[in-house]
Image (cartoon, rainbow, N blue to C red; front, side, top):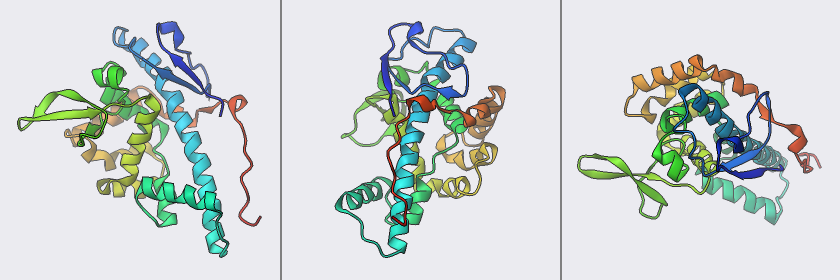
Length: 252
């Protein structure tokens, strides 16, 4: 995939998305959204975040297809190469399961509309300090001193709260997906996502994502509906930016 990295120094650096074929641009230093009017901020926020989501989903799909081929190999008692074994072990460690079927299920990402809705809520459509200074789109907390992190402006029971800092928006999208893919409390969410991609069903399994609980579900539903975010579920990376490595078929 031929991606471009753009450092945002002014609003015009953000490319407007006008149709369902999206250029794979990774934006950095996005600090220009806070002062915009609400409608313009929403539009520019999608222009910034949607390409990152689609780039991540593309890389994920390539990995998932390769893993599916290797799983078929095991069913036919074929041995993996050293490179393939290392690839699988890396995924096993990342997704915290050695069951290949479960691993493939965990790699299924949330719908684009849901990802955008959570990103909008957690970052205030790109206006939050965490988004601007830490590339943290989803308000993900840090519980380890080994994390790159920043102090939040609130406390819990006299305890400081920290949120993670990422080198890029891509890192934030990846960490968000991995959290939903690995944490036990999202098992029902994962079960649902592998039988239905209906975003209005999926949101009910995210009650524990926020301390607001049921109110959070209502917020998600309203943001998705009011901003017609479901339309972005059909958006894809513009094929003219794609490279197509050959993926071996299971019977080869």
